[in-house]
Length: 258
Image (cartoon, rainbow, N blue to C red; front, side, top):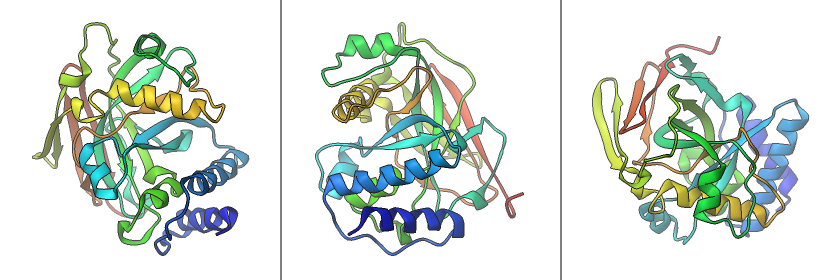
């Protein structure tokens, strides 16, 4: 399988809003190569890498895909949306949404060998966040390599507007309520994310460090979902409330993109 041709097919799916057929299993290295080809194309077109996301951080999702570690994807500047501002659902193919605690870095962080103290020292503040996950692969029929190739099923990010320092926070115990259209859909605690979202940040810094990549100051890091993802449709309003951090809202417009 040629990584460039698969990357081209995935890029075409963004443009046409038509998902591609499920990808066959492939070596993880090939899947990340396909992801990198897409990122290079976006950067060549003027986009900027604004951070990274970590996926498959819950034990349930790892069991579902038969893996024993997370994966990662790239967050581009074009993926970010303003808290509570209208978002065109037509931007996405088959979106789902999940609540997370976003890290914003104040200094570079590079592994391998990152300690918890180094990770904490690199964090400027945290924000409540909603990640819009999406799949360019038909019917979400994905394997581990398939989701990696598809940029870890990245779609969009909504960040809350109240920054909170890590001082005094125990992220493991941060509870979350996820509402859609005023109805409670999911509950959870951030300890579901590899025991603590901080562990996901450390994992990411170490994993990227193996390739010579540094997490840069100002980057946003999404460590993984606190609850199960829920599907969203045009007209839905989704709000996550995370204890100690506040709320964040995604408001999906009805109708076509403007």
